[in-house]
Image (tube, rainbow, N blue to C red; front, side, top):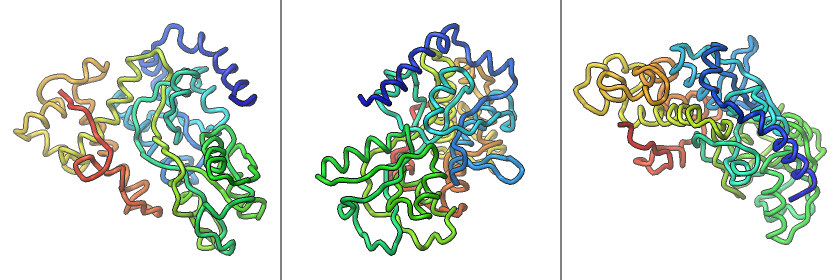
Length: 338
């Protein structure tokens, strides 16, 4: 463990007793009347504020969906933009209720710093982007390169592993945010910028000349991204987890924000159970029986959230790929809701 990581873990461990004592996030959120959600400062497709401060993105939508399930109002969310180094402290110290910030699920994050990953809302992998004029076609040609990377991210560790395993040298230049790193790449301070492949496509849109840069074909890591909550609060973790699964299940059942009202009349027992027409699946989660109906009506199913933020209805136009449903060759899979 590096000296920097040891110091970081020590800070978090010091906060854990206060963070886990008297866990009751659901009660706190109800009292406050809003979900406190930690997101990236501005990554198109995942979390990005417009000129009036209204946030949108796939990570934003998971927090909006939790608010819809709780309050029947997806607008009851307070967003905090966090850099990689501050995000875990913000969650552990109860500044936020959900960390939905393109955060990779890893063993050490779940066992050492007190996170509980509720779900995987995006399956990703780390990529590398270079200036086209560099003439590089493969990551194997990057020996001796200067590489911009976000400090405090798994990207730093993956980068070191990749170059070490391939017997190559490189010079890392760490920044507190992706915006700082992409500006450094554009200014010529580094040869390469590395982060999650989806984020590379998003940051590329921010460049003055996007066509002057290319994302290399290699994916050098697994990056299962998803919302995280504090360990030790099972009720809150269950709610966030099943909110994501509800969006996936709605897609599986063909329920959308446009047809959900008609679906209330369906004779299909699974649809009736899901929408709260029969039974009360929300009781064990601490929400009303129509919680899943609220999510679909006010935020949409997983496909709707994906397409408007990352897919065909967005500027990114990233194919679903491994984020498709399991029944369509992807990895998105929800346990039975019964």
